[in-house]
Length: 398
Ligand SMILES: Cc1ncc(COP(=O)(O)O)c(C=O)c1O
Image (tube, rainbow, N blue to C red):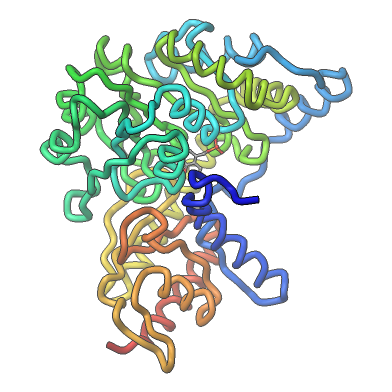
């Protein structure tokens, strides 16, 4: 039986593929330093685990309402109000199986065949595939290294087709570049989209991971933006809870209610136990999260310093998430013995085999010549990994 054209033409998630290859090599006994993970290395807090265990013991194991458990929805509404200056009533909130599924759900809910969805590039790997799976067409707006990967309002204007543009996906703090859009940057985007009837999907999953510029929610800027923005977040990154699969969104009531309808026929609801755990996470003292962020900020400085020590590699000063996205253009179209390095995928494979270091090629995010490094590993490993990369890069000849 043939699979649908829609799915046959969907690329598998290449970030997951590289991590899987590196993990396999590790299992086979090789020492591999993994810079390719998309998740924090700290564990889910014990207090959260205890709440989940209690939920199981108390038989909190049945379907919850499709939109999510009421106590969790109220906690999310409070979080949006206190952290993001956003007033979403419970009927404007939906809980799903991770921010990934929330965005998938939103695109399924709003897109008609042939609609266009604007995606700034480089992008998080799943956006274009999710747009295509919803029958829509991704339209790319390139972000430039020289402009710190900020959105150029003129380029954005040119990408909008008043008859076809249905949505734009914004992401700040940004995966893969580690950039953060300041209030000024967001205002520039706002001026372009303000009078155009389109949905803004604002993916704020890394909101706590900011080191210099505070995180601003796009929807909080003006009343008009509030009415046209779906604010997406979740517990995965902030609380070391990627496996629990809890994401959520606040937004216009008609969109949220339609998303709940879509969810009722797909996943029914997020795991009841994970919802209890997420409720516990949202009630944790803020200090716990702040300590992790301090640690990440130190690692960020270290990794940028070590990357700058590799002659010929350019790297921006990053401001958020836990990624850096250096430019390796100088080392493409080179070779080491029989090994030809034609593109970022060849370079990532070369570094995995030669240096025992896993990174993600820029091509996975729609931008060649770059590699993405996560700093979700201890400082000693960051140092060792970058030393190994430096040695492997030294062997490349043009
Ligand atoms: C930009 C971005 N959005 C969303 C997600 C998905 O997060 P979740 O675990 O909540 O599905 C990720 C995960 O890597 C991400 O990088």
